[in-house]
Length: 419
Image 1 (cartoon, helix red, strand yellow):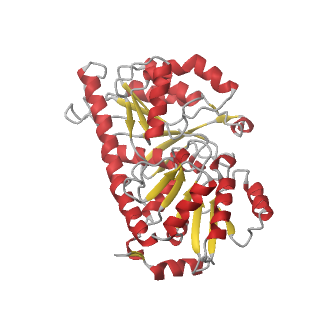
Image 2 (cartoon, helix red, strand yellow):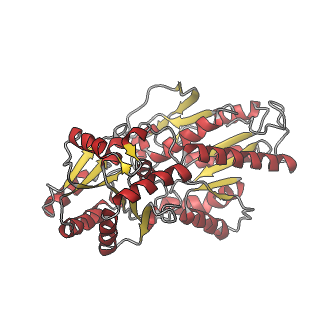
Image 3 (cartoon, one colour):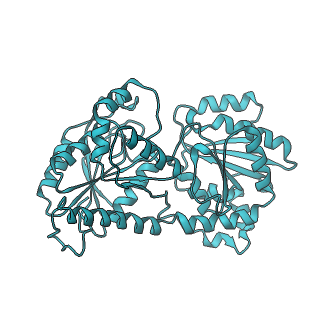
């Protein structure tokens, strides 16, 4: 379960992909809450999506959910415990939150059914330390026990890996190599083959899309795509773009594409203050058409002010042949090695310098961006690695008599597990 529900972007889509991959060899049940990202109730308690069964449990006091306090009904724990008790195979309990009731439910399941449960955590950028009394209380009471019981910790880049290892060290846990790098992926993205030539993006296809979305065909177009939130670094991105537009001899445009998370009015006020209304455009609530926006743009920008490991948008941009420039807080593995993007220590001057350099080499960058996405971030590669990691852990547990033999499909196929 990922709170509040499906509408919350990257982590939710990634967890759903993981569940679909597992469903080829396992029985999979998804537990979630009954609030959408706009905090309205979702009436269906149980339904199917892509053949996966989804249970929804009640979240009490939605006004607290707006402050990131998710009071999920204990029935979620009870129903999960009942399924595990009845299972004859190893059970993978895979969760994505790091603090709150859901991790506590996962911890209790591991403690209650240690011989059956493989406890897996995907961090998704939730490890960064923020001051707060709730965090301190949770960490002092539960963090050591939670870290001790987790069997496999999945991280998405070097920073997140090191942060996880540092936490394990702080709480004195014997990690035994359980922290693993599993980079982000894109799975099920619409094919873009018809929009490319051997030299990069098809100029005619770019022009048609720009005309369709009323975007100047002759402009150098930058794009940010994500939640409109203060920690996304949108204002400092605007500052860098303003300096770039002054230094670049031709027409430019910055597209700020995404869902308002309470910050859009401040963004629009800042744009007006800088007198940049003609050079910056805010576009709301783009989902399926986001791939069009990635493709018609020349360069993707992501300069969040906090460490954020779920920059799924930057990988989607790469897959659409759009090179990326991101700050260290949005660190991406492989892009610099493959020369498909840059990860910078953000300063306005360094951002502008990189943007200008990219503008001079767009065709080569486009080809390398797309190839990098195929090579390192394709869903098939991530799926194979995830299933292999689960298989290794289950076999290791069986050899240590931590997990029982698999009588559902036989010991030769340990991924006949329940998730």
